[in-house]
Image 1 (cartoon, rainbow, N blue to C red):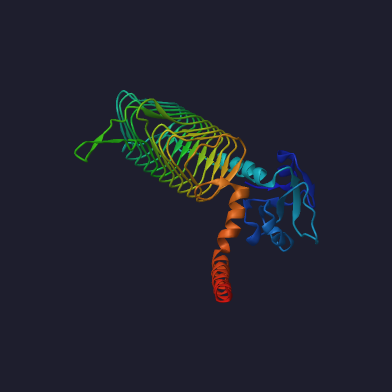
Image 2: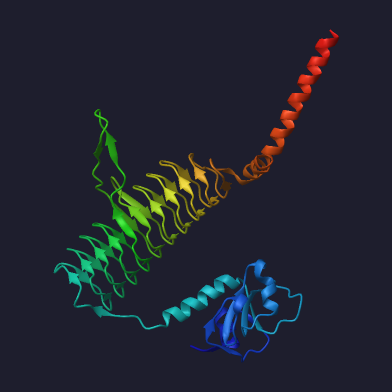
Length: 350
């Protein structure tokens, strides 16, 4: 699809600075923009690229002040990154989507498939499964008994969904994710072995959730593991049994959340964060990459980092000290040596 800068600005409620009739048909990165494309500037680290950028249209924030002339036409908006997402969704949603049921799929006679749904080849759908309108289930997906899937859900190849799972509307689950596998529950015995605790709960995923490739969400021991509305989960994340993730929280890759932990609303977890079991995290908390949390966070809106995780101001001060430990050790050793020499001098005079 081709749009002029003027049309894009009107759609985004932005303002044009340059030629409103210039047209674009694709997107590009600002560092290698090409004629006929649109790009964006949101991160100040990339500001130098805009002056030599060959893209014809650049989305910028309204407060952007150029230091040199810019060849491209600018569209000023409140939030360039968010506006880019709006445009990319517009283009993506305009692409034709598949419908129909592949003859190579295996669907139980008791399953209910909504209108305009797509069921790809080698999909297995168990008994009493309900799939909503305009859902897209791509090849080699397995959906076990009594699962309920809402409208406009997109499930990529290789996803495995265990029995009794509930998935809301407008969700996306990427390739090879596993939803509803058994929680890690084993009781130690007197003989030193472990007895499996049956995991009898399920997983509930609310509306507008996105789950990355190879991520696992375990079913609850009792009741439900819950992923609330608007949550975004990256690839390679482990969410254990009976965890609850609050609305609009985001979780980056390789994060692990142990059983029965409660994550508040709008929480941000960086990559490789580890959260121990049975802790609570207040709304708006940010945990930096590789943070390890062993105790609850009760005050909303705080930033934590390190292992064990501490408030960011304490972490920064600790980091400075830790970085200088070799120098401090050398200084202390020198002081110990000097004190020893002084003691010998005092002893010789006494």
